[in-house]
Length: 477
Image 1: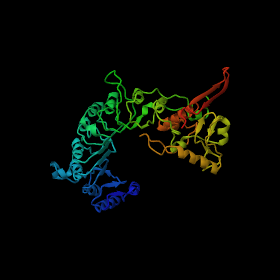
Image 2 (image 1 turned 120 degrees about the vertical axis):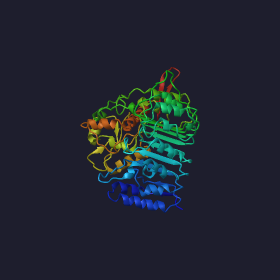
Image 3 (image 1 turned 90 degrees about the vertical axis):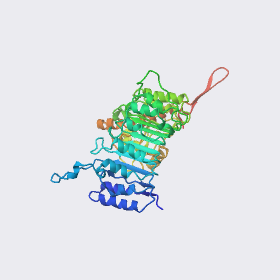
Image 4 (image 1 turned 45 degrees about the vertical axis):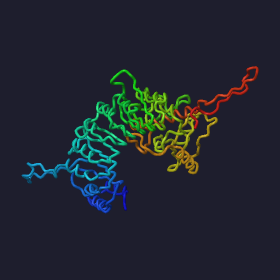
């Protein structure tokens, strides 16, 4: 009767164990063998070193399996100089790591999801082209494929052309054997016509025409597209600016990490003049051509089905200006990046700012949850004292409006960090994460609230102004 087994706690137990790891693996393998119709093993994935382990064997015998995750690790090769074997002069298929890998994937006619992740760029035993392509071709029901970390010898442009033509989602991440030439060929092949989701991570696409090939009518079913890399693609093959065109695309993740600059030192956060934009002057880099092309395509109506854009780095708010305004661009985890100061200093040195404090751990030190550079007239944000009751109410109100937790970038963002004017290096390191871009996005939201949505002016027959008033903000929610 069992179709899925969820054991995430076993994963934590396995990672903290030492000599008991094999016993844990054997226990999970026994559980798998007790479920002849098992379709998914969720939450427990051990590194595969091409040596025999009971769990990999047990999963290979489950013919109803629909999901398989391979985490390839370096094999520990142990040699005994005193032991000689005359059979080493002959080839044995049973001793070939590639043949064993193919055999472990030979009984999965119902497998629809395959994930292969190589932990090291230079493994001791490299999967060959035959192992990758042979495995994929043995899975007739495969619809979702994710490949990451494979070396250039394991997965190249040639292997890219061997992908099945009935995939629904494809994720390619950190594959040094893939370049613009291979991706350009892929964008014109029939392989991608069935794709509904395409994710390209750290492939360092240089040519905008490659992206235009994916965001085109050639992919009639595409609903989700994700691009995450450091460099910003540019024109490489010609002088004609490409156009992104898709009538089905609904979601875009657009992350170009070169589009964020180091922020100002943290001391300047508390010295912002009232005329500046919170939390720092607009020193973002100039928007790259790729982002401009995306913005132009949206504005011209070339992506009519688009409903959601996630852009962790959006210089000058080019994409943000095209979207429905959000009440808050910050995440709950961003609160830990603000400098901790006393209430008296914050209120005494920064008139005109609204400060929300939290004193759940220490009444004498209050964390700045948000600083908002606005005129207090006509605006009622959360202002609380350092009392437990007040701070709890303000924190809950903030969390209720903040987006849910998520990971926007492959760059690791610390969950908690205390910044000060004496810790410049740490601040610069943190500033290159999406946290800075979210702060900038929040700054634009707050600044736009000061711009009137409507201006009302009433004059009498003598052209004397009787009433002049502004209503709302341009990005008021």
